[in-house]
Length: 336
Image 1 (spheres, one colour):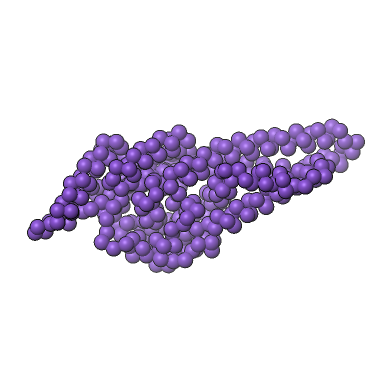
Image 2 (spheres, rainbow, N blue to C red):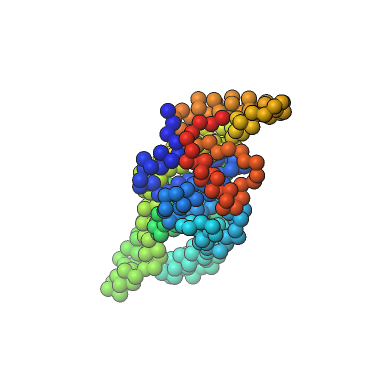
């Protein structure tokens, strides 16, 4: 039998990092916002919700402009903050960091070359945007300024690449550190001023930057795979395509050894909507169709369904409606 969302969270007192993913359009943002509201208002935790989606929706969900303004307190909530990172600023900052590292490398190696071609090669790879976003995500996770972190992720393909950075980026940093150490060692052996060079090596800014980045990434990677602290939840609608998408997505996340928290079914039409005289054939058919898909969800994801979020008669926007999502997460599970 599945454990409900509230019971799942209470059984994991150290749970701190929660990710929400799924097919585009299933309501990941409002579900993540509801969970953040639950952590903040019900559990009393200082909570941060962050979007890793280049096309952010948190401002719309909370009815408050937070895009590109750093960490902002959510109006109408006592302990909740949100951040929508301006990906263009993130990418430009990361490009400058790469440029500085290459300049430092060329300077210490006494190589009189224009660094821009190297910068272009380093910053035009297909996953550069995900790498920059991964850096920001690691910054948030490792600073530890909040009791709970909720991440509203991008649609599946983007999130898959983002999560893959945890291994790829660590491998790249490890090779960069080794390469830098070998270069400095060679410089030391060839120099006639070994004592002076040794002092310079101790202060080498590039090596220090690489080691710091690797240490931060290593901490973040360990947090991502810690089942006591981290859980990835999959949001779906009671429809065939979103169900098929999260079935594959769960396998991908597990391949990265990231703990799965379960499945949250959004947009469930309450059965009582048919408790009227002469309900419309359309509504009766939709309820019947939904029943079949809910049975399919239970068959494909046994013991994984954590909550059912109803399809509301108004759009979920603003803290008042987000609070209803929070309430639904605490209700006894039962579905349609």
